Length: 112
Length: 113
Image (cartoon, rainbow over all chains, first blue to last red; front, side, top):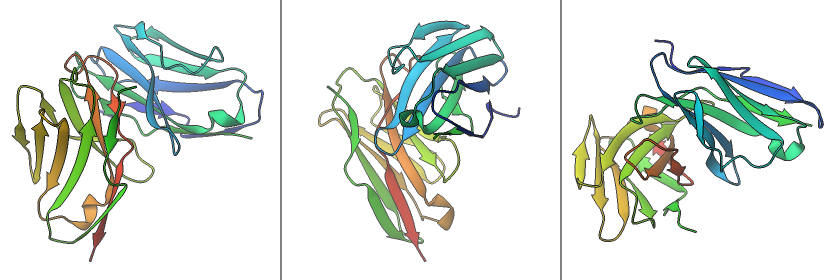
């Protein structure tokens, strides 16, 4: 298995632009998590899905952030409009029935 | 609010020595604990986990100890190698793993030759 796949690996955009981050979980995993990592706040859970249904989105910073999981093999995290304070590394992770979470390589987002 | 935290931000050890990384947690309802290793430019990598009904669990060169009385978690790495250099995070979960994880701030382990 290729593991959790995220794209793009790096994204540089200007303030106000829309950003879409993509994730393909490990095949067969029924849980998908989005995390954000910054130096100041460390690793924070944003939202997670179980069987494609959002379960807890209390970590999503504000309405500019949205996440979808249209099917078991794909999820997106969208920021619109983006702001410089959104600059961070965004990780997607997946797990099988709530066991060990496997993390992807992350997307490094820079908002200028 | 309750959170997971680490005692030391940086730990420097000699190659071949044993390393001990500590973690304090404050949520007494937590029942699942995990240690992750993160190398530069990569995502966190699972090392070992332990559930609250255990106080010790061993893996290959790693041991996790859980002291529920004082809400303390430690990761012991035997015979530390250069490849062990990374940031180590403890994480906690309520519900045995089927929720998002709450991560500590991390400890940077540095291996001296």
